[in-house]
Length: 468
Image (cartoon, rainbow, N blue to C red):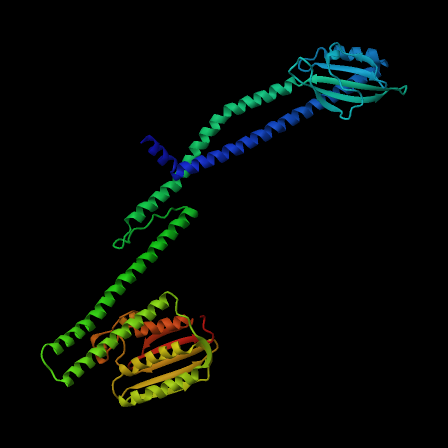
């Protein structure tokens, strides 16, 4: 049990962040301490070198003042013997290496041979733990003879300072460790609270509950950006689930009536013996309803492919004017049969790049609706206008029109304006949705507005070059 709790504790995000930040801080602190230690050691050694150089100058001044090497060395030795912090040992040699003078304990010093390569060096005295810092300099007397001066002193002061610095570092280490742990916990606690809050909200979200949102922190930082992104994602999920639920309800409603009607027709046909003519009429009615259902399923499949962006446009270059004229000739007999005036008011020459089949499907749906919902004696007008950005197509009718309140919903799936409009002709309520999808896929736009006198006008704006 204890092992499980221990594992659970160290798997927490804030604990891992705290440990990581603490280790990083300790590593940086250790690196800084090593740097400062080496820097202080260098500066102390440089200061000691300067002291040795100054003392050598003083010795040379004493020799020059008394004009005698022995007398000058004696005066210098008596002077440095009174020093409190630094005790100096020295010797003076001739150019041939003969010792002219050396301090009382200089014989114990392992002085290097004269003329060695380095002016400053560190030497270790046998039997002593403390090393010495040594300086050697060549001098020329007034009479022209050369002398070598070697002077050394213990590095005790520097060693004591470095030891105290090291002790202070050891005392500060637990304090730094404790402060880094506390600061790490305080800093890591904020993202832990945010993540726990996200987890709580996510656990409460379901297909029946999409009202939950994360509280947005006031500070404009990455946490606020993450919170806003998650809330935006929940908004999109809520919208998607709403569309799925609405789609399911719409499909269930739209399929139920044709299926019940089909079932009823078949039950009536089988309820009693009938002749072949009646059976053929019943089968024809059933086939008509099945074709209606097939068309609905095909339209839904096409819309779903548009939504998943899996409809590949067969983009070619063609004259839109020819398409409009062909459609006018195709729908003219239907309009005449219904005693409608079908006019192609304007048809500019316009070459565009797009999917000719899909655009033909779009315009056919608009013209078919216009003829369906325009009563006898009415008029349907089609216009093709070329402009700088592309083309503008207008389908104008004097039919029963669309209420202003229904215009925002006219392109929704299965939307039927009212019973009088749907009663005039059967339809799935998917045609305008497909038209809008085709226009959007080409980078265009489909809009509708009511006319002042009667009917509506559908406007299709298409660019010269399809985006697909």
